[in-house]
Image 1 (tube, rainbow, N blue to C red):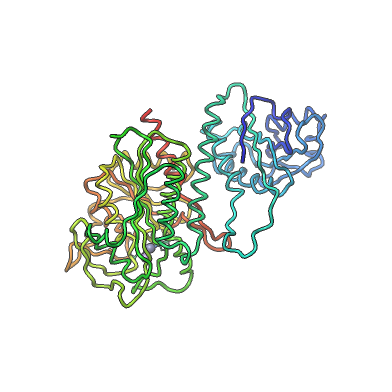
Image 2: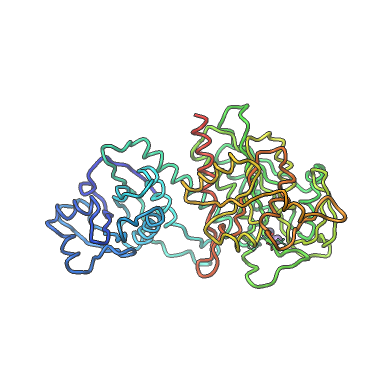
Length: 498
Ligand code: BES
Ligand code: MN
Ligand code: ZN
């Protein structure tokens, strides 16, 4: 989509559709008010008729409204004005994005950043409107035999801003929204692809393609390379699979040569059947999403490439399948990780931590400023936080605070859980340095405890995205989270550096 920002009155801009808001009460947004005055009360008459009430979810389309340069006017109900908060704004934007594509309008003026949202400025509103409009175009139909009917999609977006709004800042907000949307789209596509297409090899190829497109460096470690490095934990997961494991590394160098990089480590398990500790059949298909952490790392790198942020970032994606097989790892097996620590595998379904621990040890070589791992790691996190927040744990308060703040701005939220020493005991093993599971209590925390044993020398945070990376049921599909959060974290670091 093309975006333009204009210091003009919305009713005087020519387009296929002018979009303006009406609240319950009723109360008109400034642009709805202007439409009403210019048209000698067209909006008031709709209100008087009772058809338009300003309720949440209500949308009315009017053609040829006098005094308005656009061909149509779309009036969007926004509910009670004093309750119009972050969530209401985002929900409104999502509804508008769906509805505009049901009309034949291909260009539209969105007079919506004029709406008051507590604690949010013009740039935040433009950023999130842009993300919503881009998300409205998302369709995953590459696996259907018939491509979907071409829709008359919105192509030209016009944002009117007031004289007091800074046009450059607004342009930057839109650019950020577009970049995050593109990164999110990539993460969704990779997530939605089935396990027989999106294998570790496929993921590696996509990463190499991405790196080429944006002038980044990519390296793919093969199983023999991992053997040489002593990655016995990662390789033990891959044993039961016919697909070779890959360790994907993408380096983005936007900062100075000597700037320590931010490292993102994403779980890229392209299908998790559980291994010998096999999962039940119900919904097992959803374990194709077990690579969404890795996909979010590639998505964030894509956003970064578009935004050309002046920092250095390394993405590391350990990728494997986890399947039962005669050669698969077994409960009771003891493996040696790259760090030298030994692990008793009591449950082969706790494989995410096994591939991540070696990837985290590998990350030490980049001498990172911070390391964030992102993983669909525990079912327990879905029980604890549901689909609204990703779990956050780590060993550095400042990093955790930065992630909490980035999550608030991006509305891709995280919630911190404790990583107290007392939980570590649950990983005690009679035979090895640690077990790979800590029993049912506090499953998300003991998984992070396991990872903490590989990050002692790092400023590290762990994001458990098991509940947030995809939706189940009728709306089944990848969400692209937490690309928004990760990109915001990096935007914040870049502006700190500037
Ligand atoms: N990929 C799963 C976690 C998962 C399960 C995410 C369901 C989303 C929905 C992970 O590899 C796993 O199987 N974890 C086990 C750990 C347990 C054996 C300690 C789990 O959560 O059951
Ligand atoms: Mn598993
Ligand atoms: Zn898994």
